Length: 256
Ligand SMILES: [Fe+2]
Ligand SMILES: [Fe+2]
Picture 1 (cartoon, rainbow, N blue to C red):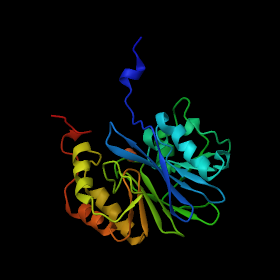
Picture 2: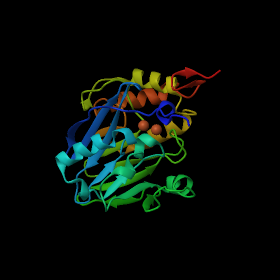
Picture 3: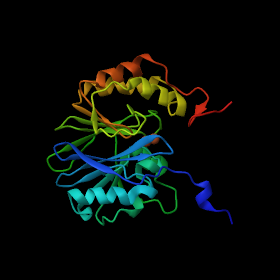
Picture 4: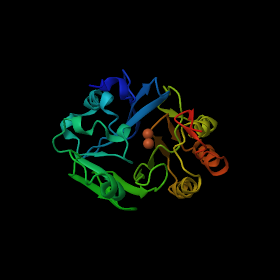
């Protein structure tokens, strides 16, 4: 029988760090050496706490340990994933939170959560512009189709103007700083060119134009540091003006 551990390759990290970014919103981050990027989860510790991304199965316990520093794990009410990939919610199955409900986009629900064996069907899904009150905070769901995946969405927390962008505005490297005001947009563009996650620029630019109108005070990408509003325009400018779509490079390897 084939040895599974030799064939499965997913991001793993040994430690995670937690930082409060803004009024009950925490970033839990680990650096995966093999992949050269951080994996960030976000906890919004409201009346009905929500975790955005679980991390992949190999790291979920490190996420749990950090959540427990803020509150009992059982209190978690929701876990949201912003598109269907294992680093977004591969640890979901293992969260020891009996009341937790999975939150996703309507497209993730229709395309990816139905028709499989052993995939949780107890989830709630949202269409564009719908909102979820978690207590004091209010999450607005933004459908962002083809910003890397067909089912992709983002979340805007309205009271703090916090924008959770998943794989948009990411930066490579071991970002120790939870928040930066540095312009790493060139590294972001080079990373997109090397890994090939966007089929074309057009849907990404259309989404970016819409995101700017939300006037976020802080941007929370899934990889790299959070971006404060002083530097966000640099990243927007790079997306609007530079080429970054797929050109035969996949995960750092030339295809043809
Ligand atoms: Fe992704
Ligand atoms: Fe990601």
